[in-house]
Structures are given as structure tokens and as C-alpha cells.
Length: 379
Image (tube, helix red, strand yellow):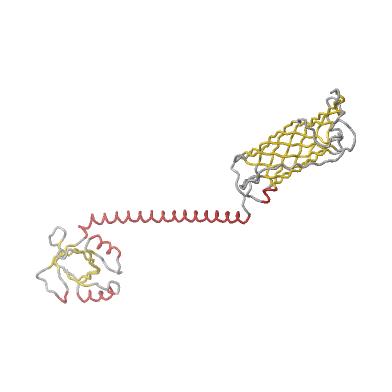
């Protein structure tokens, strides 16, 4: 037999768009085939007779452009010469590797161009016929029996995406049978026969996702860093939002509390505020005003005759403002009270009361360290 190793390169049109199977993807490839026999016949070219077959391949993308696959195929191979012809049937299983050469060169092509290498085992039965009479000569190795041989497969294929999950594939493989001389139903010549197989099929993605364009490791690292930064910014924004919400909730609660206190103060102001009216008969000693004391109903209180010297530390247009200032007690040691000056329509905060002007003036110096505009009145 003359050794002939045919590698068929199928011309296909290239595209300028990108597709890629991702690491960890699975795919299934059913295909139809036609086989060609190279053996000990006088013909050095494949027979023109139709030799159909079918197969199934399960692929796994192990890394980037590299696929690992398992293949099971059933086919036939016909051939012959002027004196006899043969028909051979075979069932073959193999494991192989497939590398996308075009994908390794550029990610900008949809088309995949794969180199294929596999090892397997083949079971065969060949039938020889007389070319002149078409009579059966023999079934090799025997009636109902199959011969077997290890097989080395070398070839290539192209695939092109029809959709996100379906590719069309076409290619050619040459199966070399080691030390097996009966594939063409006759013994003679060299002890290695060959079967060529052209095939076309569809590859279906099993993972159910849209293929993604591959990027360089540097771009990938940048994308991962940007994603982590975005997640960190999101977490910080959420934390800031929660902090602000808690702060505003606390402020709202404080405002409700203040409002409640103010409402309570308003309800009791008439009982807490002393009403003063000017006393037209009183002398204006040392520039100190004198007032008579009246209760809110307008009658003179029982203490009106016991007028005292008072240090005033604040004057306010509203009772609420005066009471709030008095509650803060800006100067320590006072017995704070709020009085209403009826003539002036104003509310004043009294720090303390004294039996003599001298005592009031003695404390006034201390008070003015805190309230610079404090003054003395008598009522």
C-alpha cells in the first residue's frame, strides 16, 4: 500500500466579528459524514461512491481556545479496483483535543479554525465482491465478526455561529489504523490502512448563556478593580444613608420632644409668669425701675409690698423664648423666673432677687462676666 496522508483545507469566508466559547462551557455536536478509503487498491484516490455515516461529539472548553472532546462515529468506506470492490462498516470511539488557531491569532473573527488530534479504537467489518460478477468473495474477518485496531486521528474544522447558542461546523479528519491491513477486505502491501472522513454538523451550547467577548488579562483586572471600587462606593453610600437616616430620625424625635415641652410650657405660662405694671408713685433710685406685681388675673399679689431688687439677664418678645432661656440657666446660682412687663409687652428673665441694691450690684459684676447686658430693676 502506498502511504498517503491527505489534509483537506476547506476554503471558507472570514468574518470580522468576534465569538468565543468560554472556559467551562459544554457543547454537543451531532454530525453527518462521508468516508473515503485508502488501502491496497490500485486507485490512489478516494472512490466516488457515496459512503455515508453519522456521529456525535461532546465538547468541553478546558481553557480559552482549547476544547477536549469525546467522539462516537458510525460510518462506511467503499473502494476497489478493476478486479474487485469492497464495502467496509466501522464503529469508532475516540478522545481528542481541538485548538482554535484563528481565535488564538485574533479575537475579532466569528469564524473558528480548529486543529484536531485524537486517539481511539475502531471496530470494523469489510466485505469483498468480484467486480465482474458482483459475487461475494469474503467477509473479513468472518461472518458476524469485527476486527479492531487503535486509531490516530488528525484533521481540522471550521465553525461559524448561526446564533448565540448554535454553530455550524464542517471539517475533515484522517484516521490511521495501526497494524491493520483488512480495512479494504484484502491483505497485502503495507500493514496500515487509512480512512478519511469529511463531516458537517451543528454545535449546540449546553450552558444556556450568551457567549461573551474575551478580553486581555490586563483589561480583565481593570474591570474587576472597577467593579470592586463600585461595590465599595455603593456600600459606603448605603452606610452614609443609614447614618443620615438615623441622625435625622433622632433629630425629628428631639424636635417632637421639644415641641411637647413647649406645648406644656405654653399651657402653664399663665401660672409661671409674673405680670408687672409701673408704679407711678415709686421713685427712680439710681436709674432702677420700680414696678408693682400683679398676677395674671390683674389683681395685686400678696407680695407686692415686699418689693426686691432683681438682676435681669434677658428680654424676649415671647414667653416661649424667655422660658427656654431661663431653663438653660446660663449663669450658675440663680433662682430663675420669667416676668411679663405689661407696659412694654415684653418678657424678661430674672437671674436672682435681693433685699438691697448693694447686694444686687455685688452679684451684677459676676453675672456680667457671662451676660454683659444684665441690669437691675426693683419690684
